[in-house]
Length: 43
Image 1 (cartoon, rainbow, N blue to C red):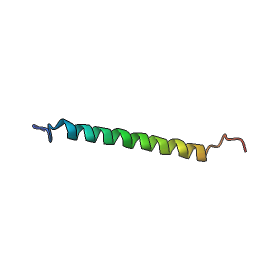
Image 2 (cartoon, helix red, strand yellow):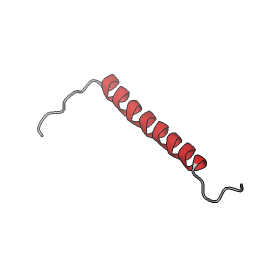
Image 3 (tube, rainbow, N blue to C red):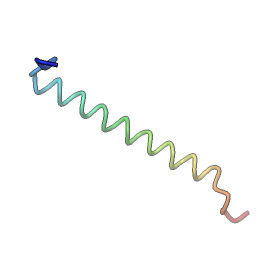
Image 4 (cartoon, one colour):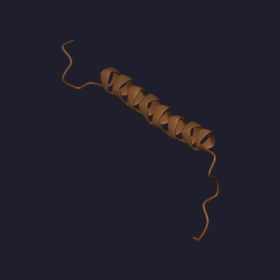
């Protein structure tokens, strides 16, 4: 736990942006899935 893996700010930025966009894409798929299986939708 002593030293960090990297101190390169560009690698840290790429990792953080990848995590953020992965979460946003996951939320988008969850919202689409809810729209598909919405039980309160008018038939």
